[in-house]
Image (cartoon, rainbow, N blue to C red; front, side, top):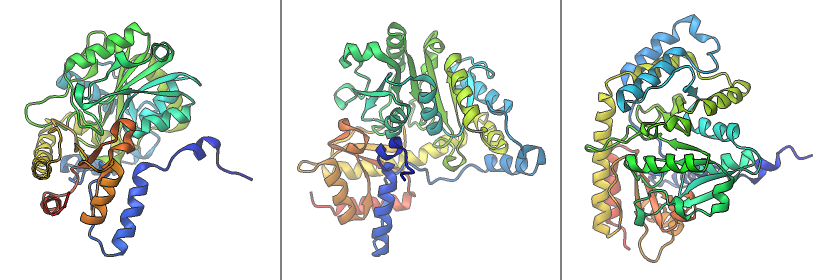
Length: 387
């Protein structure tokens, strides 16, 4: 008897689980592996967030089920953050919903919005979870191109009209994983106009919205006038506050999408642990100075890596945000063969661009997620590579 569903059998192994297996194998042989593959911040969660968590954990009343939509304090904190940071007004009761991390929220939103056979438009290259979530929901994934020539902005006019007519949802991801691309307000304006004209929802995955460098400030899609009629946005505290393991995020925007997602989630989960939500509320209502200090550290690492890549003649665009550097593989290599060469010859794990879709072939992604001292070693190893 077969105890695995057809849907699960058809899913590929999660990308980074394969890298971790390879890492363990090399380490067992005594190789000092530097893992620049998965985007998991190494910096600590700020003390003031942990202090709030510890305070709330000690209260017996906080060890009960959370409200299905999340605690009132957390939802109000999200609304306050959007008002302060973006000038966007949100109703915390109808336009904000607590998520157990944005990854969960994205997958469940797709389940809550699309029917069997509905088309979802996704960026290529893009975050692999979009593709697997669509597959599980029975939807049809139609990738649209984003590329360096166009600054990794959505090339929506290249989508076949038949696919547009059948599309229910348009996925965006800015600041972008894996390309580290950032955009200005006009890109969101065009996307909302596209969604309005073709009667679909547009969703922006903004997990890296606060991880920016220099004077760049990432806009929100909800800053577009009347965007809430057609748009939702996912947010996460994982990258900006170094809270990946806490699993806390949110979705904001269109009331109907949020109501549908809330109904689905109330049948699948019981929201996040209350003390985590309250600590996250403290994070979102802070002055963000800790976020800025972390960004300065990440930017310093980015500068080191970019200088090393430049010395090797590897082409890249210096990012204005995210925790990634996206670079072209040297001539003579595929994405996979270059990543394999770095692993074998330099003991470094990077992610081949092809892992993010056909549009990622010819590129590789470096995650800026090890200590600055460790990045000195990264630079040293890159300098000794023979291309």
